[in-house]
Image (cartoon, rainbow, N blue to C red):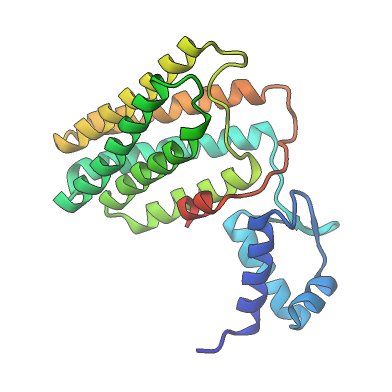
Length: 247
């Protein structure tokens, strides 16, 4: 089926934002976008409103449209919403999961465990971090799927989409950490994932919710400490795996 002009404009602008070609704060001028996409201004405006609803674009009566930027306060508010939704999703997963869901989550957890063990035995963890992040993404998406609430899953993924465009990966280890400190952090993170999984397997929805909330809160606390005093968050590009996490 042929795409309507607003869809053409939407996909073009969204792709440019996600790739980083349109960086944070980039002005999205209707006339220029109309020329780029070869559609009229009306469908471009429709596309911009759709992207605003996704949280990727800011629309101002005076300044027009631009790629979304975020300050520390907005980041904290987004994290608090993520905390509420992902905690609740874990509780739902404990009640609603299938055996196939459990298998998917366990495969991700097993991957995290294997990679963490490699990191603990290595002088340099850098070669393993990309695969570890992929396994972590798979774990969280598996829980969202097991919750059996598509509306909630879409909203969590939307939050991740905005979060990862604006913020990018957060360094959860303190600057100048020693090898022992890094290893302790990795082990703690793995243990928190195991706790979440065990509660889901046991159909213990309050414990699953609490375990996920503790895990997400730990990330939020470390992220906010890193961002304190930073003001506007730095621009960055979205990777293919982050796009996969974000839907």
